[in-house]
Length: 330
Ligand code: BMA
Image 1: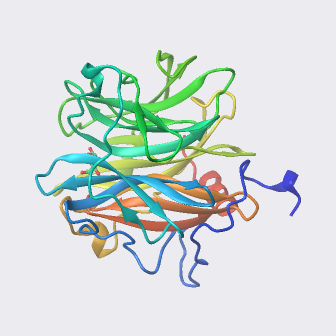
Image 2: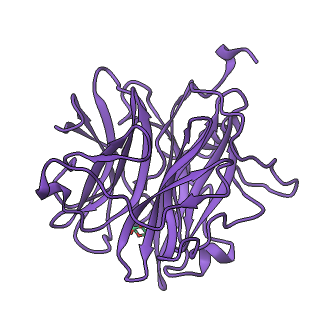
């Protein structure tokens, strides 16, 4: 295939998981037929394994997994896989190396994202430091993890880095929030020259109606495409039975990513299957990672089901972009 014609600007990853769209599927995103891929009890210490991040690593795959323990502590665990479907996750949580004991005193962490930028893998997560904020770390080898400064003061969640600098700055999406099960939330962008000092904050988008009426938050690391940054995000509806977490997609301007070009009015995936509707927190689909193969445009989406298990879904970039444009309300 002519590289110039590829929609995704990125690497070939021919070994990512993939299933063709079922013939009777009318949606732009379809589920893996053998979901969930990670059961809640994959490791002896876990109550649940969900909202987790995976990346290509040395021809195979690595990941950082949210494992809530049987004491119900939210922690981050290291995992490896040959096929990105069957995972080996370490029973003990990651022990971060940190020069500063004030920051290195790990209390709890959840909802990780992982991204390769320049020369290393960066991990962002919702960290507990006198309240919820965005924790940061890096690793070169998925053996030693070095914790960095928190990006912001509390309260903040859903910190997601872009995979490259834009106009000389590192870029992070986040969702300022409060101390509880926040009932509001817009996505903002912050910029940094050094991954420590974050500023030049810009509003990206806020909640609208229906499935994204209550709050929204960035999901996986944005995918660079010829049509803009493809962002998959979560949106929350407040029903009489509590929050419902669905997924949508947006295209952000490539040079000024706080400008939203298109954004889906309908959801692209919402809790329908049993493992999405039933679990520790019912009715949650929460995406934290994608794997994408640029030449074919195949995208595998990793998401948590009902705050209990990890599931996989698929889309094709041209189909998702087409859907996003045709069903857009910015
Ligand atoms: C959010 C986060 C997510 C979780 C979701 C539904 O506030 O805590 O980790 O999946 O609520 O409980």
